[in-house]
Amino acid sequence: MSSPQRVLITGATGYVGGRLAPRMLEAGHTVRVAVRSPGKLRSVPWRDRVEVAETDLNDLEGMTAACRDVHTLYYLVHSMGGSRQFEEQDAQMARTVAEAAERAGVRRIVYLSGLHPSGVELSQHMRSRVRVGEILLAGAVPAVVLQAGVVIGSGSASFEMIRHLGDTLPVMPAPSWVTNRIEPIAVRDVLYYLVHAMDLPEDLNRTFDIGSRDVMTYADAMRRYARVAGLRRRVVFHLPLPAPRLSGFWVGMVTPIPLALAVPLVQSLQHDAVADEHDIDAYVPPPPEGLAGYRRAVALALKKIEDNSVETTWDVHYSSSEAAADPLPSDPDWAGRTVFVDERSRTGPARPEQVWRVIESIGGRNGWYSLPLAWQVRGVMDKLVGGAGLNRGRRDATDLQVGEYVDWWRVEELEEGHKLLLHAEMRAPGRAWLELSVEPEGKGSRYRQRAIFFPKGLPGRLYWWGVWPFHGFIFPSMARNILAAAAARDGSGPNAPERTAGQSTERAAADQDIERTAAARDAAARG
Image (cartoon, rainbow, N blue to C red; front, top):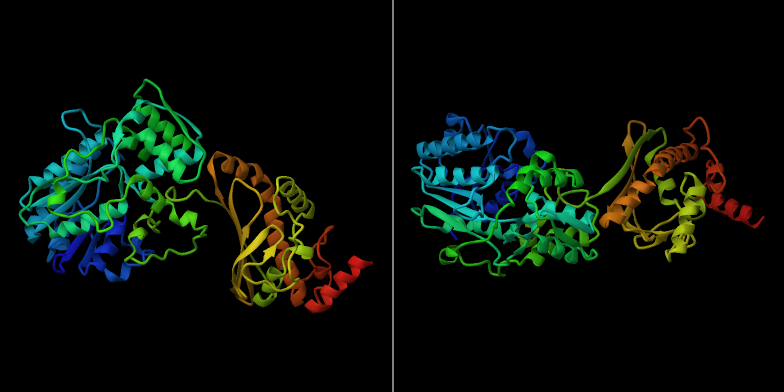
């Protein structure tokens, strides 16, 4: 490993740059990032550990200042066809950065480009990336251009396209490019090579192909993804039409990837993307644990999902080789796991402790504070397909502990006085959670409620959209009635909450303590 140096990273708010910065810090280097909008770094956990240079890559003076005292500059910026002139814009930025690096005495430039065949007409996007590499290699500062294919990790546009298509479509008619050969590489291995580019001889000026040595067709990649993700076998068949622009529009329509990104991304798949040489091995040995094959890379990208975790914060230990595949706050909203959320937030006059008492006593005989008949029908439906239904109730009417059941839910997390997270054990094509929380606001409280659903395949998406209209009735009244029950219990509401058949006697006796309420409810049940 090279001695600690100051490095400059451009594209630190992007997919690779946002993951490289903490790894360079871990390696002992001083990290400076060049960004046009520093506010985009506000949510990343390493923000306070780096130097920030606010500049545009087309600003020669600003970039020269950013390059001062820098040993290695990482150039991790490229356009995806936002305008018709983007090729020339990319080229001009590369020329500006190369000149700024020369002026400031930078010792090396490292650029991440893409695998591509020689002697063929490339797509506009790939042609631009190749040209940027050529400009940097022709500059006065020695450059190393690492050429990678499909990068596998949560947030990578190439992987997200595979994931969204695999999750959504059991049968995929596709153009002929799905028969092209690709050599995917795990994002952790891309980062490994980027970090170790610091160890290369300073006068080295050339390209290196990097890959996993695991070669397959694009169609095979989608089939293998489905197997790792636990989905049913995906049928992929190709049509004898290249149709790159049309298929790009199709990808943009059936996945959440924006059209402006999907079209150039698909166009770049018109040719094989396989390493022609492995010369990097003579300079940088493979990672100690070996290069990750495609299935391992996909498994790392899906690890958070397989752990059944509901993300509320982003917390990664940088020393973990698996963390590279995790989501970042700076990733686009279409990256990572597909998650459907119904979120409600209301304020009320009741004290937080009274709202919490209502939250902790939810379910069982106390009901769900909203359309009891709808909950009962859903419980019967769950029982008919072998689920738990509503028959389990709960162990105690007022007290909960982690691991206990509440009807068809199980308590996954409990922060006393603040948050209850319930994991659904009903039968559904996906995983579901219900999160209820309260916090002080003024003299009263703010109540928050989130229904979270991780769909599995196309059935999961159809299920969510099928029940979504009912959420418009169930969840607003649930939030309203929970606050009303707390207000009545606290003596701060003008009226008692609305009562409907099946609602708990406890809410009608909100001015009594919990023990008397439970006794009255049991007496009513016996009578």
